[in-house]
Image 1 (cartoon, one colour):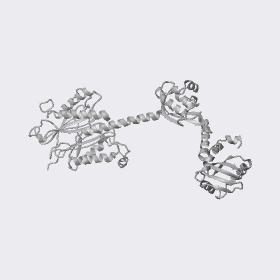
Image 2: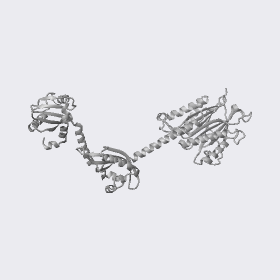
Image 3: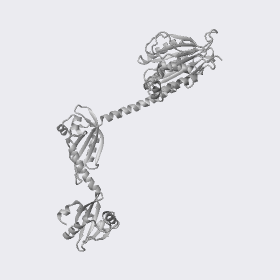
Image 4: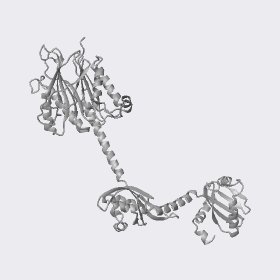
Length: 531
């Protein structure tokens, strides 16, 4: 073996492993052969037989081996010969045994190693080509961890020239809080403890602003496998971080809305009082995606002369705003209305106090303790039973005040009219001393009064309903359609539950099951027809 051959890494590897491989040739997973000068195979282990069958007829050596065997026998020196076949690369060590005039052949599949070398060389070439114009920041450093090259992208990102970055040092432009982790990652890559490290760090720009980046530090090796230089790749992830922050905020908002819906649904009454045979009440409610704070309540007033037919306070309202704040104001508004309704007769607000008085007191409290930026639209009615004001009162009487809420609709004898009290209609809480007026209506058998919030009229049309109506998707249901729907639902003389179901079904057929952006509340009061 000449000096040049001995210096070949593959030959050295063969020399070091030949003895151990030869001790167990049959069990060796690598092909081992003994070949005569004539090319006759004198011995082949199982792996070699498989190789021969793949490369030739299974009994003779590949023709490419013949001149190599002749040469090593003639020169008496070992050699390593690369033999490609079938998409694989084999390193074949030929060891001449001159006394016996044969050659021992040891074959190793080096496909992966060769591919790795090729890939590394191609990678270096690509690096050279793209370094200057890469869309991400690239830095190159020596094996001491000193960064010596910065491409234009990272210079633009940080606002420093390459010379300024080299003078300051790589770690000096990293946020102080992130330096310990970055320094440890760089140390591990330089010391070859890790081939690469990835971390998210903040760099400090020349203007003092921090920018979040994804930093990858990698040890690049040369063709021989030795460490060559440190490569750093810096990707600006500010947009991703912003998106993640927004996602976290949306998750918090979703939890807040869930809590708001829970508050809202727990406070709304599960069952509604009525006067059997004389007054029916039904309700439908659908919480919006954003929880806007609709409220409704039906509660007997305290101190009634006839406990079986206590006057009923009916409230339907909508709190300004959305989310948890709206739900909390809705809870407070309901609580106040119930408190005022349950006052004994001896208190300021007796059973015969008007809805206008209740609204004025409620508005004062809301304005005093919540401020003018918090307000509630509310229609408040009291339905008094027959005879409440003496024998001359033969039917239920409705007394209505309205603080900027959707006017209730009265169905009577096939006609639908709005019930609108005179005077101002300011929301509750917007002024300290509002003066509300009320409308009084003596209800007749068969009358239906429909209270709604604006969520019904503002329900957007889904595509199929819009096509059937000859309009564009998203068009609002509107008050005109709502009025017509009330007329259809109430015309059959059905009870309050049936009227509510028919009207609700028509609105949902218009809007579909898509999430609503406003609560929808429907409350129906009906005086049964005379038997």
